[in-house]
Amino acid sequence: MEVFPESLRGRLSSFMSNKLYQLHNTNLVTFLSNVVELCEPDSVYLVEGTREDLEYVKRKALENGEEIPLRNRNHTVHFDHPLDQARAREDTFILGGKIPFVNTRPREEGLKEVLGILKGSMKNREMLVGFYSLGPVNSRHRILAVQVTDSAYVIHSEMMLYRSAFWEFSGNVDFLRFVHSRGTQDIKRRRIAIDLGGTVYSVNTTYAGNSVGLKKLALRLTLNMAVNGGWLSEHMAIIGIDGERTHYVTASFPSGSGKTSTSMLGKLISDDLAFIRNVDGKARAWNPEAGVFGIIHGINPKDDPIIWEVLHKDDEVIFSNVLLKPDGTVYWDGSGEPEPEKGVNFTGEWWKGKRDGEGKPVPASHPNARFTVRLTSFRNLDPRYEDPEGVEVEAMIFGVKDYNTLVPIAEAFDWAHGVVTMGASMESARTSAVLGKSDEMEFNPMALLDFISVSLGKYLRNYLDFGRRLSKSPRIYGANYFLKGEKGFLNSKEDKRVWLRWIAERLEDKAGSILTPIGYIPRYDDLRRLFSHVLGKDYSRESYEAQFTIRLKAYKEKFKRIKDIYMSVDDTPAEVIEILDKQLLEIDKYMREFGDRVTPSQLESS
Image (cartoon, rainbow, N blue to C red; front, side, top):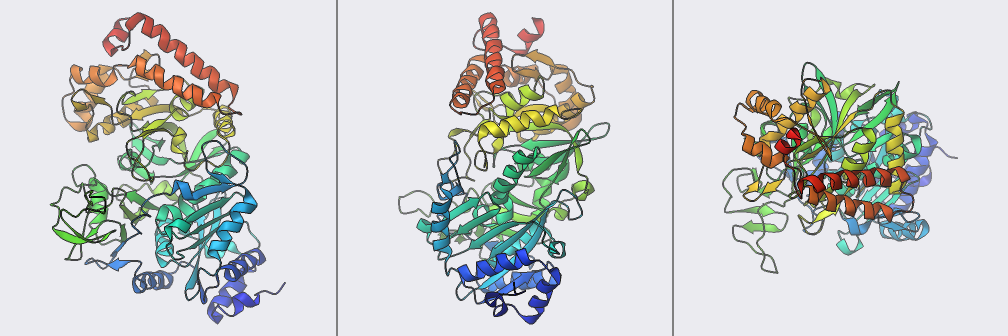
């Protein structure tokens, strides 16, 4: 074939053509040529990742109005369409056969629709092409990816969130493909189509969760690769927690339920995603990303000092869907600062007391407002985030937003028990990161239901087998920062520091535990000591009893719901049902002795 088909020759500058030629990658040329013929841009700009490229992309984002400069010259603000403020479940689908709990479309039908919408979508625009590595560029486990878009905001975001890797595309290497267009912003024609062959198409959307391909769209592709390859691609933070030494743990929480705040409490490797592989019998983890796209709602200097510092220094930040104040700074709800009288937000001009067409109050900032920053902006960044061999994972945390049932922290009996009863049994209050009614409880195993791209049974089988192949599998913990009593929340925001320290001491065999039907919970004496040491405050027996009373009836109802769900999934491994049945029998045994609830004191005395 020609090195450059006609569709590319007329749109690439001689400088860009020379760079592309030096890669000698005919697969890449064919892919780009096909996208150009489909989307019909006026020109093509290849983003190598240089400082000049970054300045060019930022300038384009400002010129076309996708970003607005702030008083701090390194800060900008981006606004999405009022109806494009979160992941769009109803418009996102996997191309292929049916998968329980996941939107799917027949492949040919889905491709025909999304390609039809993308046809000519980049006319009178420039097509930007980004080249990235998921994971450290020099790692043998890295995955290459290409983003094609007509949105400078998308490329600007990816240049902050991912490692540029243009010259790694030399030769016909494999890579994931992401094709995005702002289109006409017609929300009724918003489509996000995931072809598990390795390509994702998205159109008529700019919200990063739908448009920044390498984030949650890539997760669908890498999860599929992982299940078929015997490793794990997870919606997990990676952090180092200190004890006698640093212990690396992963933490899986649905968006808006404590994952980012948890990742700030230790040495930061990742706040959101993890690749986990078996390396010489040990679970080792990498962050596929190099930045943070975090929820900003509620970030304040008292509870989130590290993030607050990042958002107020001179490092580059993209704010999205916050309030732009008249003085060129931004405001977001929950910041602890006085609410401004007026400004500009995702709905346009905003003023205090503004209501929408249905008479509902319009918040100053959207509940899912975000910030985008580089990992290198965080003072708690662990230098091992770039370790090509990853870090050893000693524990995994599965956390939920559950007001009524789960204790704040518990340790599973073993790998299989933890995978099934803590990870695969997650139910959490829906957050503003997903379109729909907030605070509705929903089934969300491993915080992955939005991103799973294989059958749930096949996914769980791989998870169970992965741990068994390790010489020492990570311990598993269930967390819940949101348990309520009669007078409200039973935990303060800072209590999670104690739960993490307890995990570190468990890994070092320095803290004891109490056996319960649902796992091991902390002893009061250990927590009293840790509250004093970590937080410098007293911890009452009354607080302990309220937080760690096992609500047996509620747990039983939960596990019955979970079992019914898995009984309806055709390929659920028999082991999953066996573990759930055993869990229910244990709870029944304790209910016969103690009733609907059992306190830690009762457990200790028995």
